[in-house]
Amino acid sequence: MRVLALGGAGATGAVAVREAVRLPRVSHVVVADRDPAAAEAVARRWAGGRVPLRPLRVDVTDADALRAALADADVVLNTVGPYHRFGARVLTAAIETGTHYLDVCDDWEPTLRMLEADGAARAAGVCAVVGMGASPGVSNLLAARAARDLDAVHDLHTAWPVDVPHAGPEDEALLLAPDGRPSAAAVHWMEQISGTVAVIENGSPVRRPPLRPVTLALPGGRTGTAYTVGHPEPVTLHRAFRPTGDAACLMVVTPGTLAYLDVLRRDIDAGRLTDHTAAADLARPSAARALRSWPRSAVLRGPGTLPPFFAVATGVRDGRPRTVLARFADLADAAFPGDMAEATGVPLALGLAQVLDGTAAGPGVHPPETAFDPDRLLAELARRQGPGGAVAVEHAAAPARTPSRLRPGGRGPGPRRRR
Image (cartoon, rainbow, N blue to C red; front, side, top):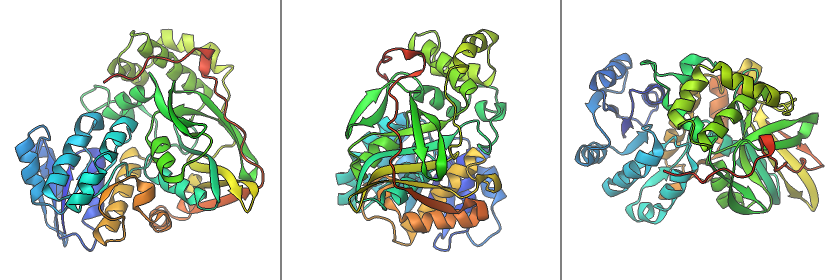
């Protein structure tokens, strides 16, 4: 089948291209990017194997060029962000051209908009999967694995690491683009720690300020506090599993980093910083904000013994309360999550494999937890990571502790997110 790697010259897109050419059902790959030289470089890098590669200049703001590229493909891997600008645009064009679709969208607002295209995708016979990266993506599948062991779900949380051990390289290179400007990932991060974000409370979607502490007691005696961030997992897991309590995406982060993020959040909400200037400040922290953050870091609770990347579900099994934890067995020996491009691009390609062989969900717009077989995809990911990448599922009789609803600093809700 013919694969269009849209944004294929970017870091995540290039990893997805590398993985796609290894799949047996892929007949050829088009590396599409608005930078033709970069697209040619990626195509040349992975040329010489069974699957031919072709570079193509495509700017997603050019509707005719986008449709023409999609019309020649059976499936598109869309790694072009930001998704609040380009996600729905590319998905709509893919549905119109009958092209299956996968992306790595990690923004909850465009995720909701794209899920509204479910009826159109079904009518067109298009399978579209939104958010198949690390978080969301792998995190959703861990949540599905945990929820499966319960008869009814109460709370459901996913968590990913920021600066705890084995979180991956958290240096300036991740926060700055080659031209010295803040990276798209860093700008997006600032957006998702400011304003208000979507979480589930008492079984209903609500908007709350981010960076609120959630203290958990997990199977195996693991305890600690993580902090809310704006990601799609709560809204999609709410649709799939209907938790009657709370659901949120959490950052496993040290108090010092969390305190600095909270200072940035306050300045963004007060209009003293934009998402871009805050991202630049995060890459090169200012002395003034570091001083402001220091008192907060002394009183914030830390991650304790929480795993770095996990999902936890609480609920009822056989009439008794139970907590189920799904985590990677030993991230100390695993590459996941590791490098951001690898952690995102590899799961995207593993999802592509299930779409190509017809084992993914049928036509419609799906989140990862309803699109894929979690056991198969997590097992394939583990094989790539080695022994440390295996998924461990642990049970405890008592539920995790109820999450706190206090935000750092004790301030009230910030402004609603505006586009």
